Image 1: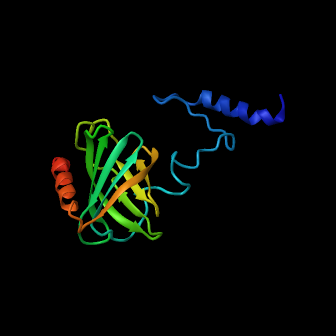
Image 2: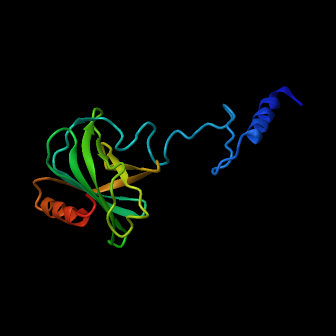
Length: 182
């Protein structure tokens, strides 16, 4: 047997001797397989919703598309660095599928983050959904990361400031749809 394959054989023998569990046996050979850099669709190092808040976000709303969905996020006024936010997601036909509460803040690098980790979901797909946290890039890009560490990218279609005529209607709609998930 060649010397270079000996560590692999030893690792396999040790794995076979290890007690089995419900998940099975995991074999890790250092340096053989490197983990992926991060969730697919995200720029390296970006973790939406996971940054530290540095500044509050003024009341506003976004509408954006990602995967097969259209989402609306509404940020309201509040105190402190993290402001209350509501996330509504619709399918491409405009049907409401899920909504949840979140926290909005601006990180030190200037990106707006929506932190929805461990949020309580409301809506028709609440039992099948993992809440997504979001980060808005400097352009029209938006990135999401759910509680299962799956990342996605999307594009902002509309941004409204809190003094826009439609903002209050979106805030009222979001609060009404998510009222049971508080």
